[in-house]
Image 1 (cartoon, rainbow, N blue to C red):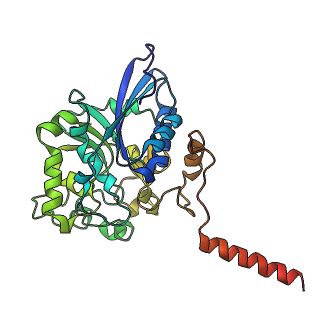
Image 2: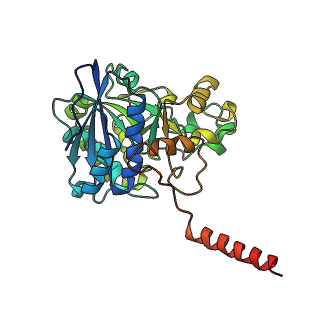
Length: 332
């Protein structure tokens, strides 16, 4: 089932791929709605969704959320057996690995695609990202704001000042055994421009799965570990603003960060894509992300309009008990 084809007035089309299970259908609705909000009026969008258990009702609700004559939606099913036995920890779900299979699932004549995670707010026209030259790179991606190099301790000149604010490091614990430099860029896989022809020719999918199997004990952040290993020296860095990870708000000043003032400021204050990384999810009660209000403003343009996270039971019980106690005091 697809939405209507784009009208003849369009001047170009952008191809995007995303993956989701049932639990991430709602944030996926917001991600793609935000893409449509900012896409140029004469640009078309070919959206490929890798379905990791969204379900019939979920698909229908997503299509209702994305009604737009510029959009065509293509659904791709993945054999969930392909995702079995892959390293899982923390908030990482099996669906996180679905992006690895994009070159095999998407049409063979599609040579380039933008991959987007399902927990993003897109604030800039994706046509600008689509126009980024790949050159001889197999991938374009943004350095991870929490750990932009393979080993920050061994490569950052101001490591002593920013060490307490960095995320996990080294990002690839066995990088020396893999022949990687500690100064090598380490990218976040939530936003990527993928050269599908190069991925297929080099079988990046197969190589990444082999890395995950062979070095399972060293895997940090699921597919991201494997892709950074396999695409070492084959990925070109994009501007930080194309993937603003939530960790960017942990740095007190640019001097306590791995970035220069201009790059950090653009990422923090003028992001082109906001990425609700780690546990900084707007749909989790108590989140205070700076772009929380905008997330719900876009949510209210989807089939989930009006939805808000429920107050946890322990909080409701505590508040109810407090109200009862105050009522008893007033009655004395």
